[in-house]
Length: 167
Length: 167
Image 1 (tube, rainbow over the protein chains, first blue to last red):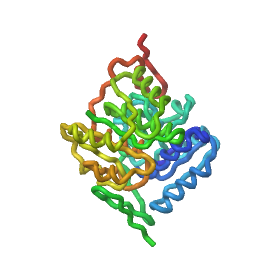
Image 2 (image 1 turned 90 degrees about the horizontal axis):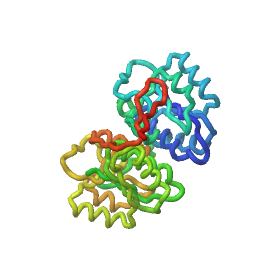
Image 3 (image 1 turned 90 degrees about the vertical axis):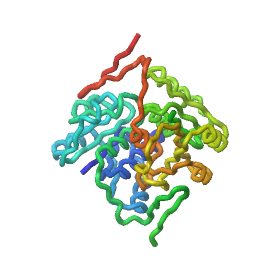
Image 4 (image 1 turned 180 degrees about the vertical axis):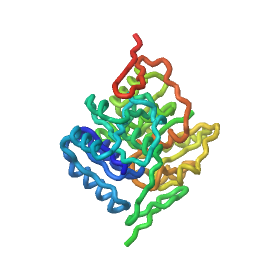
């Protein structure tokens, strides 16, 4: 299981960035995204609709207490990876047959997440984007992807837009 | 030269997504980002401040007519790569010693960009994020990076936040 935790979602400021985090998590093979901060039914609906149309079993869930959640995940055997530009270079990380929780901030990430995480990992030592960091890290992990039962399939094309829609 | 063109920036809707595109372009080694749509001085200031603090020569420029701009770039020998989920798989693409303009949408991308681009390239056949797509594609290109003359250097750390600030 590869799960993602997005910290401190704020309305309306983070709506689109967090939605992009969710869609990236799904597109690059994570199983589920959790988010803390403010509950956002609209974002959840976008994610659920994407799964319905484009397939797979990806899930989204709001959690109230992210620190408690992190500790419970660790008790349940998950290794926790916090993506932060302050961390160690991603290429020190070698995936094993384990369950992972990948944490992405958030405006101001509390020191607790740095301390409690098993790995603090950076995708470059430059400020950029949690969306970009998550995309590159999941791409680097090279996960198995499952988009079965899709209603809409996007087809490859040299210069157009082609969809296959199942009825 | 690796340059990026962000299509159709809208205020205030795209402020943060486009800013993330700019920072990702810089962090993964592009030389410059252009954007069309609505001019956004605040976004330009964020990018310029990032360059001032964290180094390098990355630039941002607003352009009025993106189709004309694309055609001029082609006349000047740039190869144009449009990132779109409808395109061909990115791994067919092999970088040569050429100048590239990488285009990212934008809400509704006009068919002209599909037709005029030398390559329409997808990062996965799933809907996700222009920020994520740009990050993974630039990461895949494995560009040389230049962040010389930085005032602030982010240091690697196992579990904290460490900066080195030049005075």
